[in-house]
Length: 146
Image 1 (cartoon, rainbow, N blue to C red):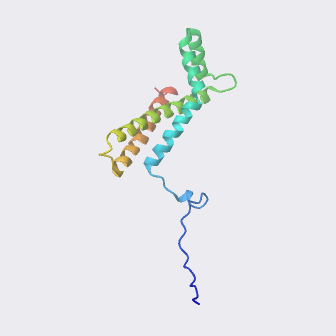
Image 2 (image 1 turned 135 degrees about the horizontal axis):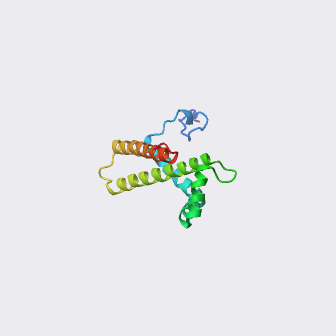
Image 3 (image 1 turned 180 degrees about the vertical axis):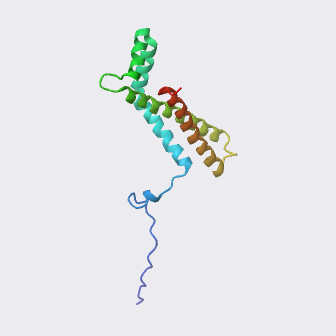
C-alpha cells in the first residue's frame, strides 16, 4: 500500500472583491472614456423627451420660443430655471463626449496598425480634456457669462 501525500494548496484566482479591491483599483483613461461613452449614450437616450420638447418648442412659433426662453430663465412650473439649465448642460456634455469618443473609436478602428497603448492613453486623455473644455465654454454661454 502506498500512502498518498497531501496535495499542496494551489493558488486560487477569483473575481475582484467589490469591497476590498475596487477602492484601490485605478482605471486607465481609456477605461474612463469607454465607460463615459456608454453613460453619455444612455443619458442622451433617457433625456430624449426633453430634447424633443426643446426642439419642438424652440421652432414652432415666436410665442413657443418665448416660452422656451422663459423655461431657462424662470423655470417650468415647479422646476426652477437653474435645474433646466443644468439638465441642458448635462446634455451638452453627453453629446460632446459621445461624439468625440465616437470619433476616437472610429479613428482607432480605421488605423489599427498605428494603435498602441501609448496612443490609446494619449487620445483618451485628449478626449476627456476636450469634452470637459468644450462643455465649460458652452456652459458659460448657457449661464450667461459672455
